[in-house]
Length: 137
Figure 1 (cartoon, rainbow, N blue to C red):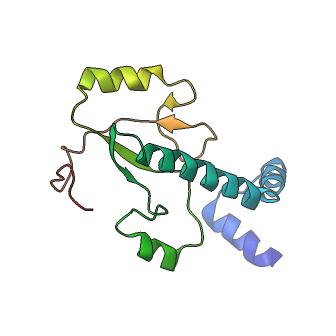
Figure 2: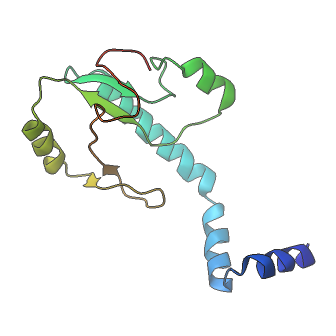
C-alpha cells in the first residue's frame, strides 16, 4: 500500500525518482525474455568450451557434467550467464594473458549489473581451500 511504501522510504531515506521507476518498469516487461536468452547463450558457450582440449573443466551448474547438477535441477528453474572454466596447465601465464588480451567480444573486468560480456583471470591456487587440477568440486 501507499502508506507502507511511504514509511519504508522515510525509514531508508532513499526514494526512487519517477524516472528511475519508469526505467525499472520498462525493463521488467522484457526481463524474462532477456534472462532466457542470457541463459541459453551462456550454456552454448559453456558446452562449446567443454569440447575444447585446452579446457580441463567448465564450472557451470546447469551443465549435466557438473558434479552438483542434480542439486541445481532440484532447486532452480534456470541459470545465469556467469560461469568459469579452467585451462590446462600446459599454458604458461604469458599464453593465458595473450589469450585474454586477444578476445574481441569479451572485455576484461567484472560486474553484476552491466550487459557486457566480461572475462577475468583468477589463480585458483590462491584460494581459502586447496584445489588441485582434476579434483571434484
